Length: 462
Ligand SMILES: [Ca+2]
Image 1 (cartoon, rainbow, N blue to C red):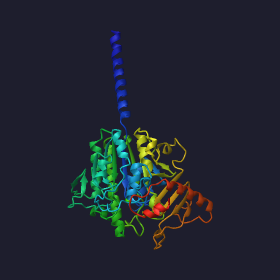
Image 2: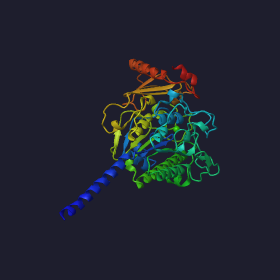
Image 3: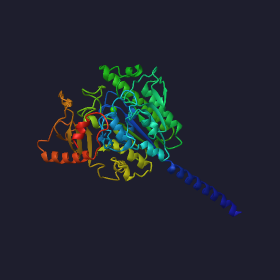
Image 4: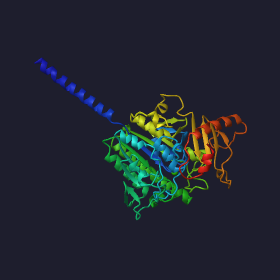
């Protein structure tokens, strides 16, 4: 019967159409995973894609090669905790008084009751509300007390430590936390964080996940294991050799995480961010880790480029063209709005974000600048960047001056002078006045610092 013979292919075709539609619906309903990888105190010059030669970083380099690299990527503070507070809130951290590192918690946390103010909502809160499973592996540094614990700030899972720094060999101390339970960690810490990140991805590959992988590498203490030290036996400086081994360990762990995503076929459904929380500590007054910020001047703790301009990447296979190089200034405050946009979450105006969604800019849909102006304040130090101009007052120890006061306002044109070596303030007084006025208007919007540092000095600037 003709009707029958013709109906079978029709049924098959209909079935295939149905299955294809269902598969598409499933795919489009699956929100992209968000992975934020943070390095700690990384030197600007030390990764392969940044021009580094002596320390191979093939896995981090592959994120750059496969995605977008920012050549003017900044963080909103030259210290660990403030930069992380800005990262997780998408707001200048000085708006809520988180201008300085929370004192007394640097070594592991005594729970002195201070941390990321409870008024603030984190990216983990928002993604969790949108149905994501959320995890932090690594360093927190946003409060060590019970109220500030990561699992009170939007994270379903936590493995790591609460303070600002930690030894890499934890065999006897049982000072890692899984949730709120102390556990002993037999592995070298950077390897342990890689292992835990892979485990998180493996366990949650069937649902949208947000993983914040916050390494303490390459922050002090300078500790590496022997097999990695052996990789760098040709480096004559012992401290640089140790730094190289520590960075190589982080790259190994990043490689394992990328392999886990690939094995789970999640490469096209995962947005990966990579950034350092601040510049390398190369200067007196910081605990130096043998990093290099060349060709930038300054260090962690300063508002010179060496403190605030960092390696910064976004990777989203199939959505961001491989090998994209984006030159306009961007900042770590942009990470949350970009992640939320990828996840299809609308940003509400009352969230008062300072960051913006970078996707239209890096894909060429918008040719505008993401930011007209970027601002910094750390006590008496300050900076403002507008176009290629930067006006800055920085800690005088950067000029080997024994006084701890800041310099007079100095004006640099970063297009021709990335190393901030030619002060143009005297020849461009009108530009100095204009930028000073704008910076002061921004500073007036900020809160008084809740703790630490030159609180009075910051207040005096208002
Ligand atoms: Ca840091």
